[in-house]
Image (cartoon, rainbow, N blue to C red; front, side):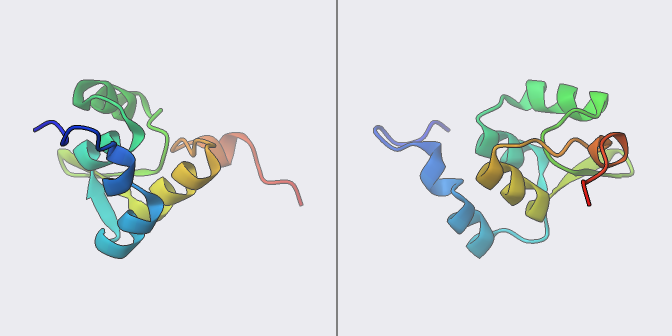
Length: 91
């Protein structure tokens, strides 16, 4: 359902709200809404390994790591699933 008139998804999907109400993982659909992406675009990014935050494949489904989602929302920097091996952190 669409959000109420005048209400932005940022309130429901703000880092504070997510931190207070979400568990350790979230559905791809919920994470997509937090990023303002469509469901189909999100699953396409998951399949390509380019979803903005860490995704755990569990059988035929996928779960988004809430801590990773929060870091991306707060920093604006994506954490692709293979990003840590591609570009190591400076020491």
